[in-house]
Amino acid sequence: MSMTLSYRPFALAIGLGLTLAGAALAQETAPEAPAEAPVPGDELSLGTPVGPKTKETAAVGEMYLAASFEQWEQRCFKTEDGSDPCELYQLLKDGEGNSVAEISMFPLPPGGQAQAGATVIVPLETLLTANLSIAIDGTQPKIYPYTTCGQIGCVARIGFLPEEITQFKKGAKAVMTIVPFAAPEKKVELAISLKGFTAGFEAVAATAKPAN
Image (cartoon, rainbow, N blue to C red):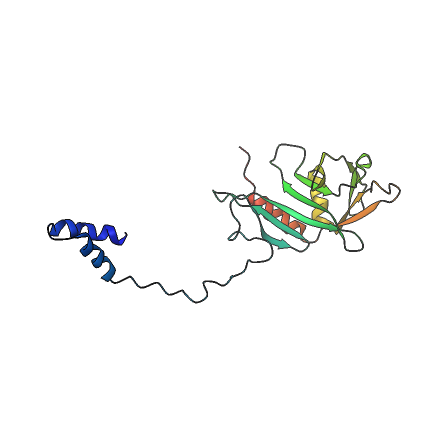
């Protein structure tokens, strides 16, 4: 509230004998409220945490890291009701340590042929007509087509049968093979570590909503 408004009821109450000069003098002589002293440290940046978000730091709709299982990460999407859906994620690197592709796996509701689904993202410079293949622990590989391409890369949506999930749990590694567009004669083999897969898949399955 300003000084003028705070004085107005007082001026009306005394009525006669109050001139504009007197009102101005009263305002000039009224004590001013002391300015608040700055709190030490208010002008300092407190920094922003670096690294993956946690459930506590993630906003609704953001992904956060829920747990790690050897080479796998349990990543979840924060929801308003707390029923955060999760997936099992692994970043795939070539023999030189370069990040090349990624795979995200998630359980599927019972009733279908596939027990789990997966989304695989590979570089845009991939020969799409060559498809990609996955061999689990030295077994006969399977070929999967690419679904679409976007700014993040080209995507393949894969389904795994129950017996293949069992192989994932018992095996040591799987091998994903992709073919570069610029060098179709050179196949790139990417190891998918299966260490921690069993515990990670069970943790993700525990967060899945039951089928209606």
